Image (cartoon, rainbow, N blue to C red; front, side, top):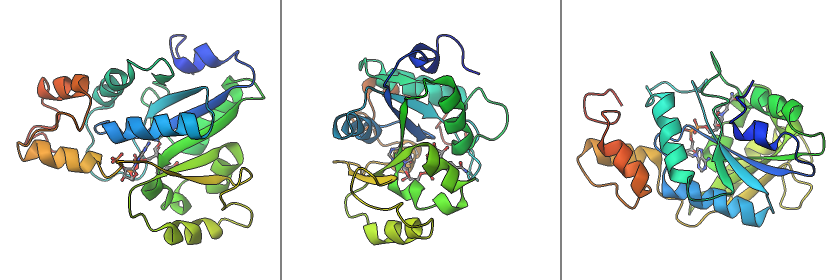
Length: 225
Ligand code: NAP
């Protein structure tokens, strides 16, 4: 259930919506995430991209920054773009959030003709066989896999081939589309390492995110991250 201020509630009556859902931990959000979302908007003719910070991802072993802090950083990062917004759907949900359940909820909350695009990193898509109901994910959305420079597409193709014929491809019928994103060699782990080493992250993350990080203890050495 989303609050009425949530973008999903605002979009619920919109007909013919082409909606990007930007899934990730955003720990922290950085400029390559924003470039990827902008690429998805233009390459796939989307109306909006809703960032969906994960609450407690099923696959994470390490401790993440708090969901509330990751949400606040994502709101700050996207505030200047009227076609970007942030949903609390996954962070407010008790327990584990699975992408297939999020997509099923969105299908019910939006108009029947809404078309969903789930945007995430190609590295994350490589693990899709370990996700809950990967076929169900692909039945409910087109998956947009953002690639980093030098990414080996053949690995992705072989993982996706095992999900069944007709899934992989470059044409509009393909359920997984690969999206080249300039500058995607910035990563959240690299930013966390730089913070831990006392190195600057300004310009790798939006200024407002940098200010939030500077004024919090979330990524300080000793915080366990
Ligand atoms: P991850 O395993 O931490 O990330 C793998 C790689 O993908 C990292 O290099 C990461 O870079 C990149 N990445 C992640 N999100 C991205 C995005 N939106 N745009 C560009 N690159 C991105 O993955 P995660 O962030 O935890 O999960 C990604 C999404 O998949 C989330 O929405 C998560 O809920 C979903 N997921 C679902 C299941 C399931 O349903 N069982 C299982 C796993 C993941 P950065 O670290 O720089 O972001």
